[in-house]
Length: 146
Image (spheres, rainbow, N blue to C red):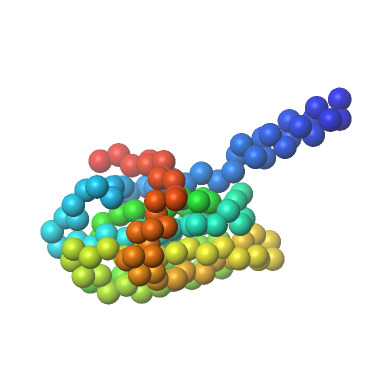
C-alpha cells in the first residue's frame, strides 16, 4: 500500500510540472511583425527548477506577459522604443531592450538555485543563437481573449 501511495504522489508531482501560460496575444514565428513593432521571445531552455514558473513582465509588474515553465518560451510584439523585460521568482531581474521596429529580440531566462525557490537571470541572445534555440522549445498555452 505504501508503494502505491508513493507511486501516486510521484505521478502527481511529475504531471503537475510547470506549464507555460501566456496572457497576452501570442506572436507566432510564421507571422509578420506588425508595422511599428518589434518581436520579443523569452526562452527558457533549461529543465532546472522544473516545478517553478517564472513570471515575465514588460516594463512593470502590472504588465504580466506570462509564466514560463521549463523548455518553453513566450512570444509577443511590442511598440518600438525602450522597454524593460522583467523575470521574477525568488529574485527579480530585468534586461533593457531598445526595440527597433521590425527587429526580433531573444532573451534567455536562466534559472539558478535559490534559498526557497529558484532564482533567475536574463541574458540577451543574438538572432542566430535565439532562432536555433527556439526550435527545441514548446509553445505556451495561450490564455488570451481578444
